[in-house]
Length: 266
Image (cartoon, one colour):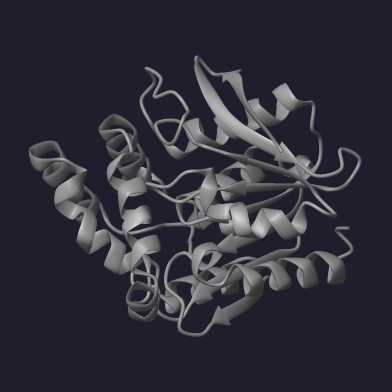
């Protein structure tokens, strides 16, 4: 597995590519406040049969912050720029939370490029204007650290936090080490982003997944998205929070594997 950096849209995007280069391309797009490592346990299995790309969106992980004003289109065009840099054509995208909005926006911008979508714990519209503004102002005043515990409770199920305290602490560290500019910028993108009208125009095989214990994007929100996207499928993972790639990577891997095979994407 190689760790590399690509010049994209006036900044640098950190990415990793693994698996056979002639295999179907599967791209993973992260949630707010995380980096590409959240997919490691999924990639370790699926890289046997997919050409996998993971990356840190701008302002997260090892990617640059950039000077542009953040919105979902900017994040989507960053991903498009990365795919262009890598010389990749048609892809399957698995997006988690804001990564799911990025996946939907790329589909809107370049529908001919997308073979399928796996939308995890996400929706065409996440949260509301006042809620995002409250979070933004709290971080401006006191930093991400002040919200760390509350966000982790929304990310991870009580069972996972109890049984995996060290891992929980590590993901909290990942969160609070996110650049303030990148985190706030992506909050602004989420506050202003609304892809509900575009959802009904998605014309590729789509699997919508949600953890039953997700407090950030509750199952009813994801289930509603599945009804908006033509012929989309919905899978509920019992007892899991907002990050199934961390809590149940084996099950998520099986769902992705089954879906891509049933839809002839591999």
